[in-house]
Length: 309
Ligand SMILES: O=C(CO)COP(=O)(O)O
Ligand SMILES: O=C[C@H](O)COP(=O)(O)O
Ligand SMILES: [Zn+2]
Ligand SMILES: [Zn+2]
Image 1 (tube, rainbow, N blue to C red):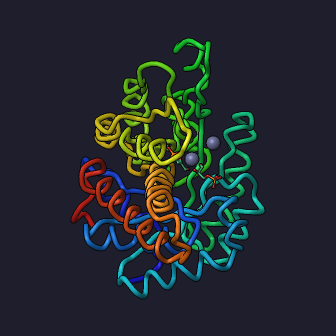
Image 2 (cartoon, rainbow, N blue to C red; image 1 turned 180 degrees about the horizontal axis):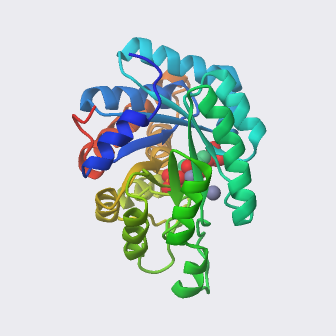
């Protein structure tokens, strides 16, 4: 049991059809729910911290909570920085004990993204830390933009090969039609699997990462709305599309929104049904259970990662 890098997990995932779940964490209950699920499913696990999460919880807390989770569960866990936007935050996280960092240079030019990623790779690798980079821009729901116009922001396969070669990065986040949050598609969901296959055929040894991979399960949206929420029209990536992506070289699947929805639905239900309740343990405890259930479902039925530890 230790904080580990994703090297071995990805090597295993590359050779088979499962993907490793990377779940975003913000507090103790979220960490506990995810870790309990991974333990029951005997699955590989990446816990990831965004800059926002780091600020919310204060930098030291999440690191210490993850260390506690490792001690309590006996699992090997990857502690990963999600969407580091500059060298400084990546450096801080490496220095704080993270075993993996993402440098997201996707908003920069190709050459600037390469230069920035190289700088992070150099610093991180010297300390035994692995690096994820991103090439291509994740789409938001773009009302009037047609698929071909939108695909202009998708990852170019030849550029991906050149990028990996020149940066020495360990894994690569790609854009094939997913996006962050609960509103991923206006019309029918669409992912560019042909592009994904092209990318993975050009860089077969590079684990690919799918961001924005929540499914936004309709029953959880319905529960939120039933208990006083207001999130109409939310839509995510269908589960069978995630399974397909895992077969085509995607080794890491990022999930945050589905955890938020599960947690929020449960807390809303408890507040509506028990208006006299004011002990936080009475709603955060069930919320933790809801996270655990959601993560077990993902590991088992979507990522195929049960018993792949
Ligand atoms: O990609 C993510 C974190 O980096 C999360 O994606 P979702 O918003 O689809 O859960
Ligand atoms: O990629 C985004 C993750 O869902 C984290 O979101 P956040 O920046 O609100 O913590
Ligand atoms: Zn990005
Ligand atoms: Zn992301």
